[in-house]
Image (cartoon, rainbow, N blue to C red):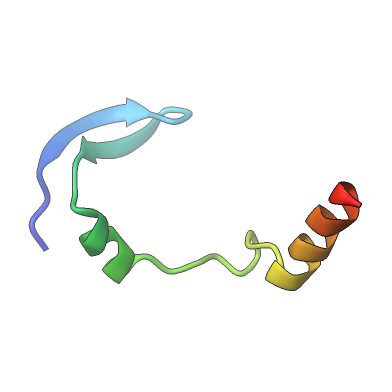
Length: 52
């Protein structure tokens, strides 16, 4: 993988590589964090109950 950007301290003083990438490249390497992701079906039910 080729990275382009600037090293900078951001997001609570974390060292970050700030730059750009194609969305397809990000999609290919991204993995969801199961501890952070909401269950899709329960979220849909909650959203529907708010609309009713």
